[in-house]
Length: 258
Image 1 (cartoon, rainbow, N blue to C red):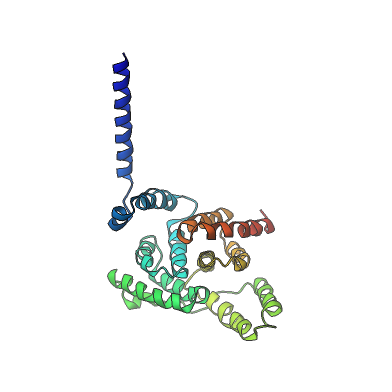
Image 2 (tube, rainbow, N blue to C red):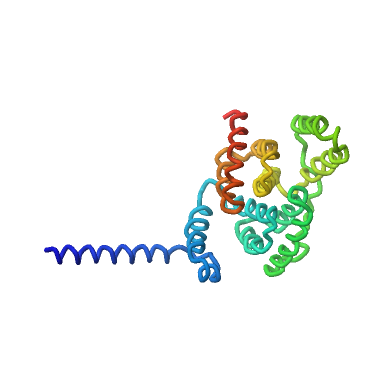
């Protein structure tokens, strides 16, 4: 009897191990071979948690996940990782024009050097995909409409807090950033807010988050989507940046009607 029980337990153990191995094989392999050969646990987390779980969560569309990932990588100067994610963004429905506009927009929020470095990677990805230069042009020239109440409140804040100390910065903020860049039709207002929030979280710029989170929600981003943005970015900007964003997000939620 004892021998039979022992044999049965052994068979269960073998069967369980085999099932676990089969389930692991069923997970699509995303991590490069060099990662799997050098740091196997990182490869497992990449395949089984990041791509098989986080990217599959329904709270945010694959397109939005690609936008915030590209924005976070650009803000963090991670151009080596941008190549794969620019391709993934195209696969997820982000257009070449929108990717180019994201890089242009984030030059103002992540700095010109990061934008210029990203251009080189984008050019390589577009060339590999056979995306011609004329596909990067758009006929949309009319600026988007301005929300007068929102713009007056923003301008008043700049006049009170920025202009007395750095008048030139206030002028560029009003004249270039909000009267030009934010009104370009090549990227929807919600998407501009989305990539701006992602870049701010990536850069640990929590002081700038309340305004831009509010602007994102005014443009249609929901509470659940904001929550999912922070969760997703924990994997691309690091847990400290995501955790630092949480109390800021909570304060914005608390200040807005449910």
